Length: 249
Length: 269
Image (cartoon, rainbow over all chains, first blue to last red; front, side):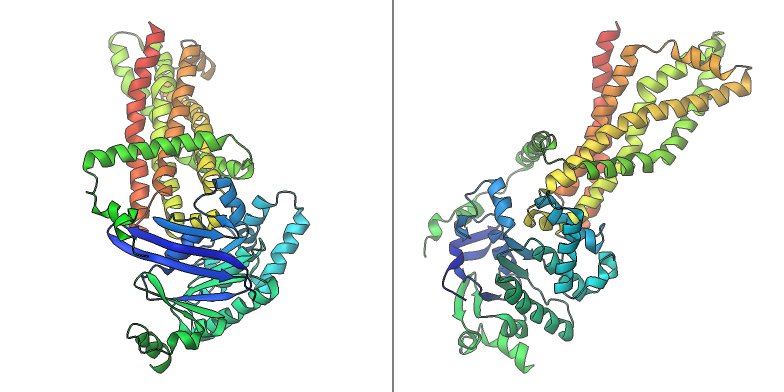
């Protein structure tokens, strides 16, 4: 991990109707860092990463990703930027009318039109192998388990060789063993593909396993940031129940 | 950072929610933007030829059975119902041309489009709606693919291309139904029947029918896509998108039919 910033967020506000979700968020992501964003459901964690990839527009504030202001660039520039930012969705968002192979080919053939069929196959097999699911290549998403779907979703983002990975609740709805496998996969991806990542979760086991740094979203702001121990070594009544539920219960 | 008073989000929520009429105009504006985006992006590279062919197959080939049955029955029923009235004036010999003109000018475009609005419109609305609520459209966005081009332009183009072809197919099948009915009552050869049917059909009839079918096809595609692409609120939204695609699609088709009859009527006098 070095000190070069790949994502810089300053004074970010976002509301939905009368509900203020983000109230002045400041956050940096350094190169080759795994940053875990923690917070209760509905605190705006997913909103934050959707703003980072330009799926949502902020009401106020600056979001700089790989040196580009996301809300100031043209749609064409945004598409080019998205090639460098992988997004793994909470529910995987696999295209259910396509096989696993077609799901993986889809972003690749549309963004690198000069590739031969052989090169495309090679790339698909390489990333599927990286997530340990080469045997599912011809299956439909409906035939996969929850954990397999997550892995294929991650493989689909990796195929474009992104510099930044955004994981939205990667372990949500999975059994503990599969959660461990996904945690290991996130670490493997960072090592093998040299990515910087933001991992959105409320699973502290995941946070502890993958996070170089943890940021806790409380009342629309990052109130606590640091290592896992620094964040949870506190008497803050908003933080303590989080830790107690995950590790004491 | 304590600039809440200047925060646009807070200022925005203090404003009154828009009224019914304002909402209607906002929706209309949104639809205009959607249509404009189709024309802007539909004809610019990169082209999604393979997906366009797949959509043409889905919309066209898979509607054939239903359209064949409906067209054939319509031909039989229309001929059977028209015969007594013509017989009263001793004009049963006009039956083939009456059927030909009625089918080509109105029945075939209208029937085909209404069936397609039900079958194709609802399918597009539900499919895109489901893709929206399961974040598949967002997944395309973040993988640097333009989902509008891949999902919307291909479907709208496919329905605009396919509905005119299906319209002429419906007219042909309807004529076969009419021929069957005529053959039961009269000793008429197929050649004589089709000759009598076609000799009254003008170039204007064919042009009008084609133009109408193109407009109807475009309407079905754009309404289905708009409803699906902008759906929200989970599974409820998917159902609503499918339903609205059919209801609004059919309503617009009837309006367009009335307008086009008036318009092409100007050239017939």
